[in-house]
Image (cartoon, rainbow, N blue to C red; front, side, top):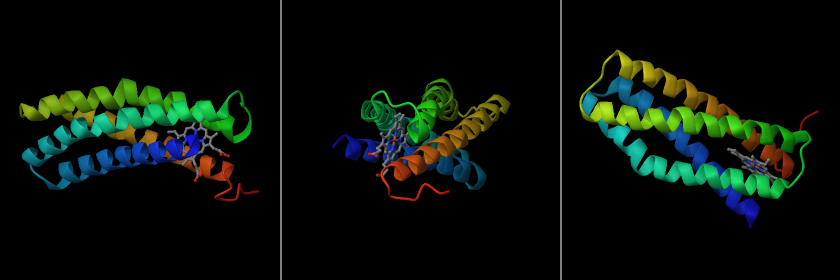
Length: 148
Ligand code: HEM
């Protein structure tokens, strides 16, 4: 049951970050500021309302299943989690909120795009770390071979 919750929450959280990143890049490359502002709004609500509990549940169930195990693949997953969390709490969530605010008042200036670049960079890092955790999780449950 814990594994099922972990797996589901992990996939939801990863898909959220991928969706936020893709919708941000696509809206900013191909659409007008109204669409960009709409995307920013949706990332905060319902986006963050889905992402935050999903990532918290992923971490909580992961650590609970791992208990005291620290070596091998568990150890690697364990080490990645604080980076995923810190990246989310310190960069992704605050920048989603501030970018939504600026977009809602039509402030698309240099600072907006600087924070936007930072958010895209942090999002890409989290997608990479989360994908590595999915890969290692699948190795641990025997869904994929661990590779020699
Ligand atoms: C965002 C972070 C994480 C993601 C995306 C993630 C993803 C996954 C996935 C998809 C599986 C199931 C694979 C499958 O059966 O197909 C899994 C299993 C597992 N994960 Fe995570 N995980 C994350 C964080 C963690 C953390 C922090 C820990 C604990 C240190 C952890 C411990 C485990 C354990 C113990 C299993 C089950 C292994 C087994 O039953 O043999 N995970 N993970």
